Length: 212
Ligand code: 3PG
Image (cartoon, rainbow, N blue to C red; front, side, top):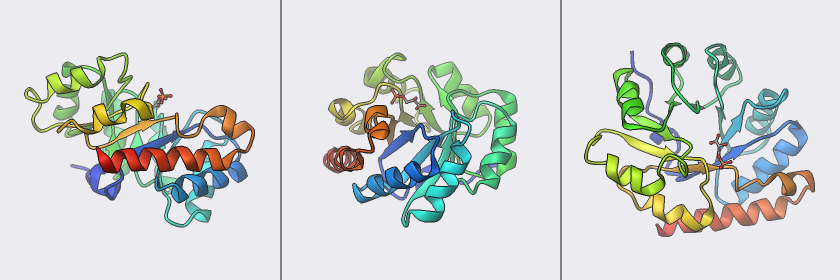
């Protein structure tokens, strides 16, 4: 069994905001700001009690948003993601049981890897589009450049430590299809309801990605 690929599900978007949300009303405002700023593909992480409700609220109330679920660390999370209507799923790592649950969900899946060996294991499970995490600690853009000739069939989405300043370093690599990160919705801006700041950060990242 193979899953639909994740890159087409992103519809050409090369920057994925990684969101930590626990208030569905706030989530809708943040989703609107990010879509208005040019970043419609959103990863809502399962790190808070109301994360699923936040993801469902964005999908229902923000036109144009493509909502996936991330930080899936237990097999049962995949059925929850499917039931919540997630368009893609993301894990920080990969185990046999996560791979089985992802395949059973039928949803495009981005498993996390940090080394060549982990990427080879992901390939054995049939996954060739991989999260590279935590990117800045696992060697950053030079590590991905080094892996390219060894893993010609693999394309990565680095996350972890990605910021506007280093977007281009990653997006200019032939084996990188997108980047992700939390810098687009900083906790302070969320707490203070500064949606214009989030829209500005999204617009900046979308422009940098378009120029990369
Ligand atoms: C993730 O789950 O992808 C990371 O939490 C993102 O890392 P960052 O906070 O450094 O962007």
